[in-house]
Image 1 (cartoon, rainbow, N blue to C red):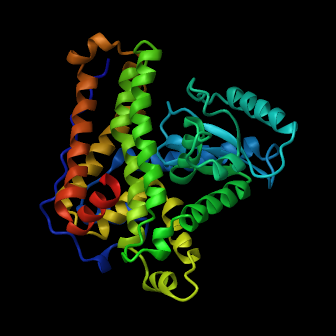
Image 2 (image 1 turned 45 degrees about the vertical axis):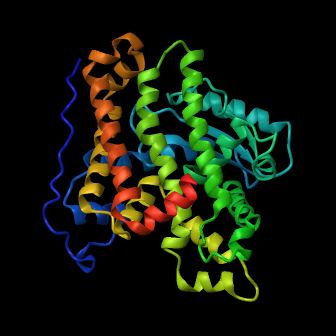
Length: 375
């Protein structure tokens, strides 16, 4: 087995250039330039992703319509595609139910198999039909199952529609508008903060559900695949939670003055805030995090540690041998395995950087995270 490379140590001693000297591009590009740190694995994954999305779009073009979108989640939606990634997908229906939808799902499954794409995991959440009605009308309560919560939150935080995106776009906008319209504190509270607590609580709930379900899967599957799922929980799943919280906190931290004025004016419309929030939710999680790192007082050393740990994690996932090794590693071999040891170290570095980011470097971010993410 190939020995895992040592985690990259990023040089953050130099002063960042002023913002006006940064080349145009994404927030992640600008942040990497400011820090002076290459992110080769992240960049390779970003370069691979568009071709895979385009191929899926062609595969499903004749099967979807204005009323149903092929929606994909996971690494493909986060622009972190690696050769061993699964394709987690659903047929999102935003319209009348039809017997033909089941035929479309079967045809999509067959074409994905023929194309050599990795099937979704055995949980049953993906590879089937999702109705927008359930996502919109069953937020909380007895009918909001784990599967429904997963589909809804992932649609918000990490989803793209390679074929016929109209159904996804309508559902995404309706969900955001409902979260905001039902959040009475945004319009009627005496506190001036614009953090959507209703949405933030659902994101926190989903993160805790993932952590609890991780143990349930460990028990139900007898430890099979534990090490790989552990790595994803510590890094990519945690990144998803972080990006969701930052999108919510960004409604206060990064809000344009005209949007704040619209919420305090006589009409008290949440539409401008919904548009602002959607602008974050449509970005990959790493872009949301990079935006926050660029526009808060988080130290360059913290940003470099966070991104460096994640880049090293993606480097492991794109190595087919190391990925398979983690998937097949038995639980009784964890303590002395070099690949798992590296993954654990990366998880600790990532967690340490997040602790600095949210609770030590920027007092405004700390105050908001305590009030909305903890209490």
